[in-house]
Length: 351
Image (cartoon, rainbow, N blue to C red; front, top):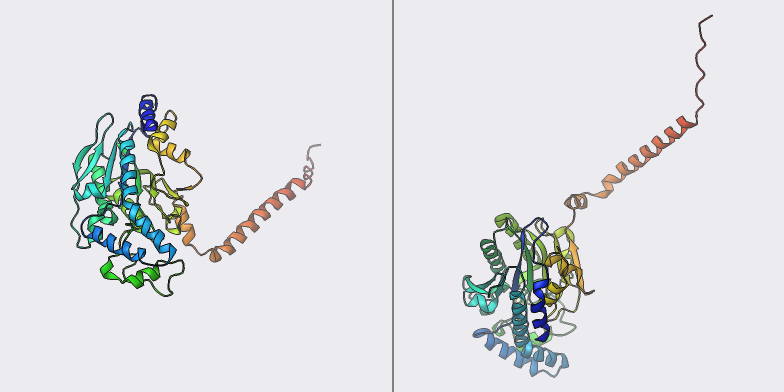
C-alpha cells in the first residue's frame, strides 16, 4: 500500500492523457473476474470435489487452483480498480459483480468513481448468468455505454480486457462446464496432459468470447459509435494465436497488446505506468514502451496487405519477371548510349 500511496502522491507531477489529435484518452477496464454466486457456486463445489477425489496429482493441483481462484481474481480487480480510479484521466469500469448489480463505474479525474446504469439481458445458463462479461453481446454493450458517456469525437479509447482465456476464447470463466452436462469420469479424463483422442465433448468451448468475436465487437464499435482504439490490451492466457495477427485488426484499432506467456492475476501496475509517463506521452504509449519481454505488440497492418495476401502470387510471377527484364534492358540501353562516340558534324556548305 505504501507503493500505491507514493504513486498517488506523484500524480501531480505526471502528465494527463491528451492524445496527439487533442482528444482525451479514456481507459475502458473490462474484467471478467471469478465471482461465483448461486448455482455457479454450487457447481464449483461439485466439480472441485471431483478433482479432489482423484488419485492423479494434476487433479489435486486443479482443485487447489479452483479453491483460490475467486479470491485472487477479486483481489486483483480491487487493486486495479483503486489504481485506475487515481489516474488523471477518465475511465469506465465493468466487472461481473457490477454488471450483476445493474451498474458500472464511471471515473473522472479528481473525483470518486460514480455508479452508472448498465444492464444486460438475463441468461438461462447459470455460469453465463454469473459471468455476464463472458458474452460477446455484453462486450458490445459495454463499449456502447463507454461511447455514450465519453463522446468518441472527443476521446480516444484504451480497452483492457482481463479474464481467463483458452486457445479458442479471449474471455472465458475459470470453470466453464456445468456438472449436469458431464460426468466425473469424462471430466477427469479430459483434464490431463493427454486427453482422449477425438472431438471434444459438446460442452467444451461453448462459454466465452472467442478471439474473432472480440475483434468483431471492436469493429462494430467503430462502425456504430465511431470509437477509435489507440490500444487494446487483452490480458489472458493463450492469446498468442493466429487470430490476433496484424492483418486481422479492425481499421479503428491501432495496436493490440497481449501476453506471450505468464499471464497472472496482476500484470500491470497502472500507477507505475502513470509515474513513468513522459511529457506529452499518452498512457497507451507509456504502457507499450514500459512493457516487459513477456508482451507482444501487434501494429495494425497497411490496408493494402489484405489485398496483396489474397492475390495468387504464382499468377504475378511472370509480370514480375517482365518488369525485371524491362528495367535491366533500360539500364543497358542507357549505358550503350553513353558509351557510343558522338557523331561527326555534317560538312559545311559555305565557301
